[in-house]
Figure: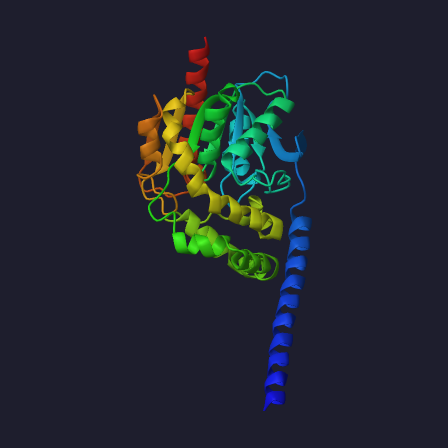
Length: 333
């Protein structure tokens, strides 16, 4: 009997190892295919500890322009997402547009062990802007980067001429801190299991479900044709990027508990744009609360619009950014 049990245990162990090996191989293949399909674009800017990748459009450095707009993407995305949504249009209207891959995303290095913090990412973005000799810029932050853009305005106000926050995450949200789950997730066994999943099953499962995930994020509007390819969304499937995304999301609630009481310190002209039926970032919890706390902030709530308003309401978003630029110029004169 003991021999039978030993044989069964050995077969099960071999089966599990075979599954792990298959997952590792599939992840390696998918990563190679994704990086071949979406190679590095733009330039890399040196900052302390590594490099940030940035896409550029519009008038070049030193050329006359209507101002510089910096685009900061949300979770699970990269610099191409906001660039294709509104960046090229703003460039066509005379703005110099810079769209950054946040640390660990696209082709930016993760750089720092604590890079999950929006405050650390704000410091790195600020260093990159200084290296590029960019003066105060209009900072456009979508979703997760609502926390990043406001961190820039709070910690590096000299870098910020104005804030345009699109469906921003800004405050701790109901149910955002789940003690038991968080304790397991951050335990050694939890992290080991999550790391194993990141390198074995996340890419194959994600590859099969990317379109469905994107459809959920765009609700109630439909998914634009060619979005996944145009925005280079499959780059999120690489294990290093997938892991960075998880860590960014995991630390966001605690970060906002610390940052949100400071919003009255923001002095930059601010416009906040959100959809009234956003299923991802609740407007009443975040955008509306932020508008009450940032001095002089303008709140624009779009009826019948969800989370991806930079795509589905691009006309309004671009118009508000241009109005913000005009407001900033008038204030500087």
